Length: 109
Image 1 (cartoon, rainbow, N blue to C red):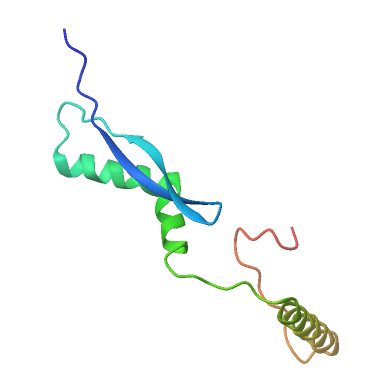
Image 2 (cartoon, one colour):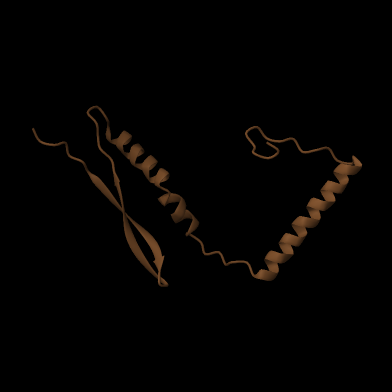
């Protein structure tokens, strides 16, 4: 008896290395079981691609985003700290109510 045909759909993934764009292979195998149709196999392949993180990585690399400068990072951090202190003061004075925590949140746990 012959082994079942296991089609491998190769997918090239660009990876940055030494300033150039090289491609590595991500082997994602999808096998078709007895009563499975082509649509189900394609869905199974799509789910494996999603779970491998390839799609998310490609979407994040779609547009170039420049890193923030140290001055901008510092300015944003100072603004965030001042907002937190202001909110804590308003909370202490009773001018605002405490934010409700979402179910499943790890804050204040």
